[in-house]
Length: 90
Image 1 (cartoon, rainbow, N blue to C red):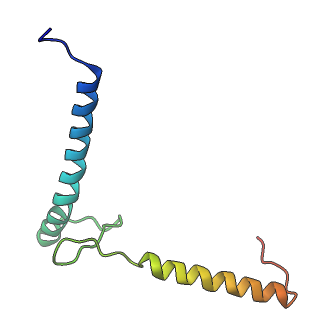
Image 2 (tube, rainbow, N blue to C red; image 1 turned 180 degrees about the horizontal axis):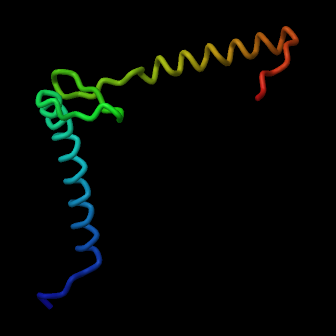
Image 3 (cartoon, rainbow, N blue to C red; image 1 turned 90 degrees about the horizontal axis):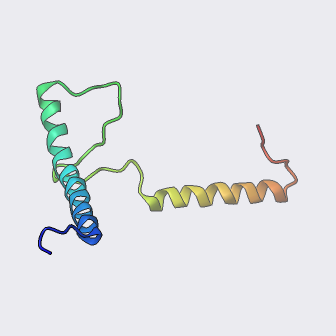
């Protein structure tokens, strides 16, 4: 039958639409934010992602920096436990 819609066709179409919306959003977001900044219409009451001149997101800290900070905190907690200080609990 020619007019029959199959579940796999609907699933594939849905996936293609979702990927299209996601990639479109990622592509146009830095362009729109930049234009809103130029026009002076960018809201200041919400956090807006920052982008570099190539449109790549500028992350506040890389995962490596966060991992190093976490390791430092864990080391400090181990030293405190070995020295006999109680854990800090709220």
